[in-house]
Image (cartoon, rainbow, N blue to C red; front, top):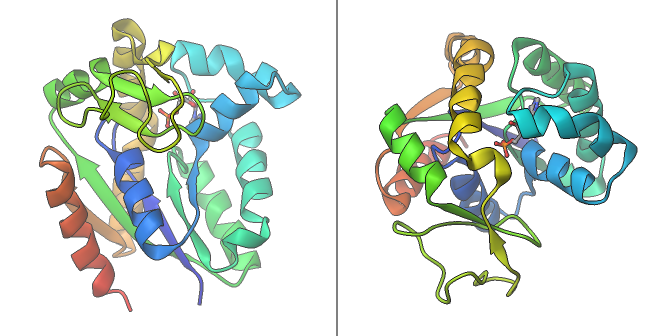
Amino acid sequence: MPTFIVFLGPPGVGKGTQARILAERTGLPHISSGDLFREHLKNQTELGQIAQGYVNRGELVPDEVTIAMIRERLRQPDCQAGAILDGFPRTISQAQALDAMLTEFNAQVNLVPYLSAPESVLLERLSGRWTCRAQGHIYHEKNNPPKRPGICDFDGSELYQREDDKSETVLRRIRVYLEQTAPLIEHYRQRSLLVEIDGAQDIEQVTQTFLLALSHLS
Ligand code: AMP
């Protein structure tokens, strides 16, 4: 049976960092909807042009566009054993579409690590976040600095601060999360898939908590 893991939580809580660590340890692909959109924006594809305004304003890209992009990604051969989803689903209708897609692949969502942290922690993390230009590796200037300032440890590419990590847009992203994405917590809790993790802990502690949850899965 394939394994599909969905990381849930507000912007800045560490979903991307943890999803990458888990992907490395399990060999499953890490699928970040935000990274996919940023790639489309960079390449100025048709989808990128549709998404651009929404991403820059910190609003959600319309469901049908997002769902089609993820469907395309999940159909790739590297997802046959499963995947680690980060940033998708973000609305109830995206979650329903995901269920339908996975049913087609004879699969289902197996585990939903839900990371939470106080808003002050999220703001501090987002304002100090640096992202790698080539592959989206994530750093924090204090909590998780690169070995050489401004340069990604993994691929040597330039680190930059995301436009939507700036203060006004960050507040909008948190509000959008509370209004549109937080209802998914209950959606997955009711299905007994939710594992609640204190995202304010340091990176290694969070990793240990969800690895333990994962070991109970099989
Ligand atoms: P992220 O990197 O996850 O913070 O996503 C960056 C931006 O991409 C978001 O603020 C949205 O504009 C867009 N985005 C990412 N994932 C989704 C999604 N599942 N649904 C709609 N928009 C999304």
